[in-house]
Image (tube, rainbow, N blue to C red):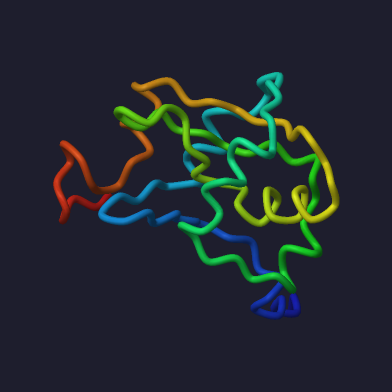
Length: 125
């Protein structure tokens, strides 16, 4: 009989990022960008937005900066990170100037958005 894994080691099955009235299925976004070559973004540009999100500094100290961020196009703003805020925090703290990132297309962003915008505040999949 297999031994159950402790909860902290169980794989995530559906990670979601909430930003105001919006939310995105990060697990689905990771599947979309899997196998793509990442681009690189300047940490200073996205770190200016860190005040908008909560960062657990203890967890952030442990993250892998080689894992690409995931960016989503946001009307009138440009691409915003929907995955990787802890990596951005750590990179800024360590003086890392660039991080790998995958930018979703508008169609891909719409697929992984679970609510907000034209999907309305109560739309969930």
